[in-house]
Length: 457
Image (cartoon, rainbow, N blue to C red; front, side, top):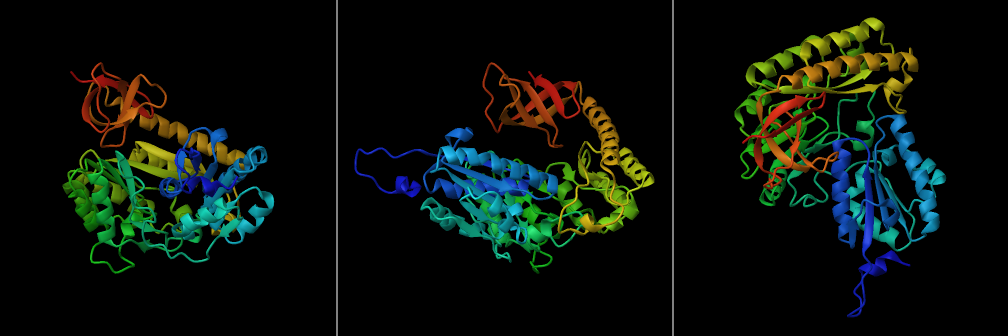
């Protein structure tokens, strides 16, 4: 069967095959955002999404290569699809994203996975509709450009009608942290025109979006390289004025670029939430220099103090890597000390993993795996205790929650978030509460990552 025939016009009374697509996104929010846009483009060819892999006519994997362990996992997933392809030769398998964008990588992947029909990297998403059509006609397609030309959303209407949405304000990164592959697979920094960003935000808000996240590898440097008349603080203030939005978030902020102006805008704008994700990565200045992070721990902590002085009740989360090459026990203890002093409400913690193509992979004094595991366990123990203590402080209090829907783990509960990005779950009431409603919840219990309560009377 030629898949594209099902999208053609058929004689009156003839059934059209319902084409199903299964989508899996690996990695960061940028990858998830890409998946949403690619899904929208596939919908134009008659595909609708399914949660059942075995029913799919199209399987789309949006990949990540931030760590080689993640890449191995994805390659394993691609290998598992071979049996499905053998049982259904008409199945269309598409692999795209950061993993494919690595120099020369697709040459190796094609040999390992000849059952994949379309390979494309992050620099060619604007061509995806044409690439998909070629694959649907039976062509084996590879499209991986060496340079990125994308400067705007390639499917800006992909999230229309959703309560929660995200908008990319910029692409790529210029920081070249020693452990990170992003500048090589996402390109150098390119900011979108502020008029385009605002037009997309206004369309999303008009379509029902109330919870918006602005995305970029380093949103703090928005517009600077491109010479715009607005910086990120200005853009954030303009987005805050868009009618219909209730909550606004942004990720990710680089500590070296967190300005007083941006902190002031966070405090003044009523819809910008009191939460900031500010990756520390390590608490040792020596390790931070080796990582090429561009700040010291003293400078980092000064930015946190400035934030807390101006934005009352703000919560801070972080990314932290243990076991970077050359990290000593003293270096690691300094990381624990910063975690203790700052008091993160949440931290995403990782063991350093070699990433070919980055400077960190070639550094001497690689840390043994058992040492990295032991350090990660100690870090997680400390952070879990800090997170639990933070959330226990809410027991007996009322919090404002934006209802996002039914809890994934319990259909008898609803879930939402506070303005500090704490997850709250509570029983489904007798009278329905619409998704997108702001409600008051009385907190009765606290876990490390979740608040549990009931609707206030």
